Image (cartoon, rainbow, N blue to C red):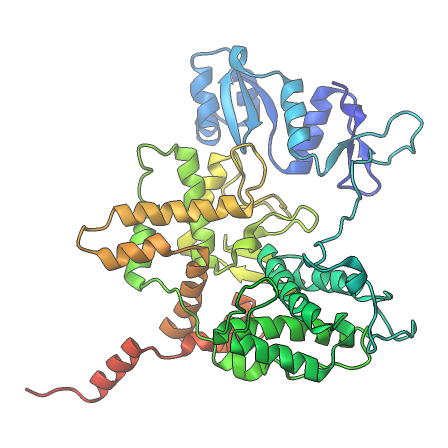
Length: 494
């Protein structure tokens, strides 16, 4: 292959890679922040280290192999460095080609002859596809209209769109683009509202009056069937979520000038709904301590050491970072999430939360050994270098791990911890078998707010809550805590 046929689109303007394979590998190693292909001999090892003792400490695998071989090759594959004899190693061009294809979002084949120089090759499909399809079951003509409350004045309609379909897509893009779970929830609720409007002869959304929306709220609370025959759930939490999504849509449309009025103002009774929310799905402290002990132990016999090291690092990030599942998914354009280390080797995790709000989370010392062990296993220095912007977790193929992969790794550790419980401990085993990553977030919040009395505004920032009332819900006293307080206040005298 000719490396100069590839473009680095991560810089502005995009530039071609160097002509030679060796120069291209050096360029990629600098761009990605880790070595890709190194040919080691005893002479080169000595030149790079002050002494053989330092060489053995800094490159133990290379040093051990050079005691038996004249040449060793260290190359990057599937998220970590491998060291093998030269005869068993892939060629430098093979490693280069694999790396370019693994990072194909950044490195692309150059435009063919006759195309504009420096422009990346076009890909099939639009560059910016729609974030989400229109709600299923709604005719395009139904939603692609503007109602009586839509603002026709371009000077004050900051969205610059003329009908509900375009306005709904812009709403989803801004309010739910980061989290696939939030996006799915909003689309579900818009579909539910559209399904209710159709048999009532109402629509589009910008034509609904306050009385229409109150009738929709009453239908939700009464549990009436929708046109498909499915009963609209009447659980208070479900009704609150549905009304909150609808209220969020209308409030955003009104705030951006697409609507002249907001007919959904106060529809969700947001303050009252928040105050009645109670976090559930907690793991007891003993169960979390048991899982921590399992993660700190040796790898099971059927799990490769590299997989186990990665699993423990993922566990540490969710356990001690209190992040949502999607917040650890790598975003190449934003270079998030990433970690920084200060002069005292204290780490900070940077993520993008709901509402596209960035936050910095100090990581406690307790989680750093697992993270450093994983970084060493994939050929990175134990502590992140200044300005390092690399995926936190790699898949077996060398790419960043997606949400399903992260979820599966945490569930695998929960399952292993459940098997290592005494037979009679059925309650804790059932809790571990049902637990997920969000249970760790609830545990993190409760540890801050209840166990250590962290001020609510501080905990709110760490958790990325939009309202401090959401954070305050973790401080509510349960029946067990209330009983302990009462027993302590009125001791029994025999």
